[in-house]
Image 1 (spheres, rainbow, N blue to C red):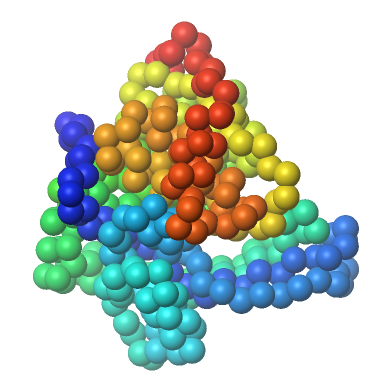
Image 2: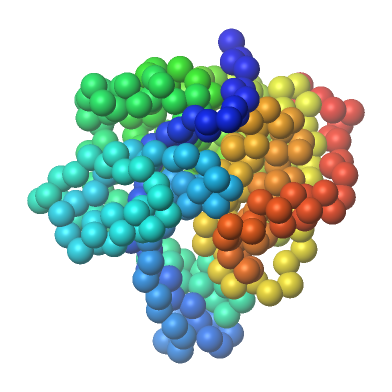
Length: 322
């Protein structure tokens, strides 16, 4: 049964995120990228992960956020702790001092598009169903009006989160390799966020977007947001489906975190009672800011205006995917 999305009051409820928060290393070529060759460029290190990126975006829009993740007892853990504190994100990490904090290393071409990546994320396997059944975790999940999780969690861990989370539930697919972990919980999620490549991997469908939408519904998906890089986003909302063109990008800096930002801001708006059609416009506008100027305290005002400037959506097959 679909639950009603909570409406924010004078005191905002705390949203809970469960998933990745780790060290990001981003190498960007300063010349046209040559595969199999040494490319001059710039390496920068920061903190990322699907749920952390989403949490940062949510904080930019004034949301109260608590993040449940896993980390080790190394310098990478200190970087994550500092980033959470900097953004005012409440930290409920489970710590294993003898383990290494997860990391993600990406290589971008000269335009900022992803060329390759390596994910060292074994510690997330420590977030087992048992670990997530600790009393304080159960209480956080049960009290939250909305929970956003990511597929860095195992299927049993995702099932555990869905069991204890009593409010609105959403998930980010993360990657083609991990998206199948969501299959057993699709009918327990209010909305799932995934790329077109991840949707193809999840459904084993290489047909048209309409066929993919139908396949997602057959798997029990209630609502889905399917991104496709700079191209139109496909939104499944019950028995209807539509496509929304994103904002045009003039000065792309780095696409890392764009999909997580779409998920976070769409999630926030939809939880606050916005129709998915308007919520996705806000999410797309926020992602456009993230990968160009960055998000800051002025982002909500800018995003609202950018969202209103987007073209109207295009309905797919007379509003039906069935």
